[in-house]
Length: 186
Image 1: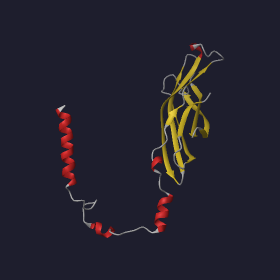
Image 2: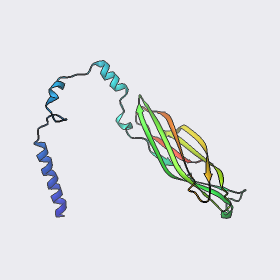
Image 3: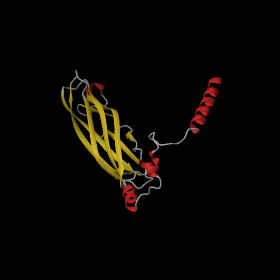
Image 4: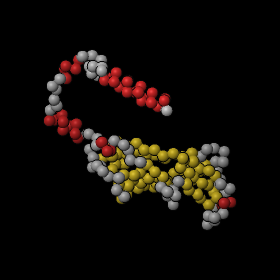
């Protein structure tokens, strides 16, 4: 208990000491006088406003694996309930996204990394992994694309795959709910 109180008191003392410092220049000199009274022209304000990022859009929308679509199994024939008929199983290990916002548009780059595991009926060679990326805006799909990835599978290697989708643009005016989805397509 005393350590918590002493931390609080120590923080308060540090804040009080720092508040007594002079503001001065942000970069250490007294050259701020050259900026006193500076104003932007209407053209400069308009140019800045056209590329300004709305505060709500400074964070990229979340990326999620669609429920039930984080793994995919392929069997021989129609024997989907027989574990001995499994050719391969693919799983998504990691997902990521990156966004930029300008002029009322969010541009998204999204990706997934996963692996393929051969089953009892699996054979070395290429397997087809059906991966889908989608973007929803206020509950409506604004982008949805299936990518059939050829993955080289072998019983003695990690059999990893990765796929990145770039330059997906979504209109953004503020307040929308945007979600990025990834998962295996059936």
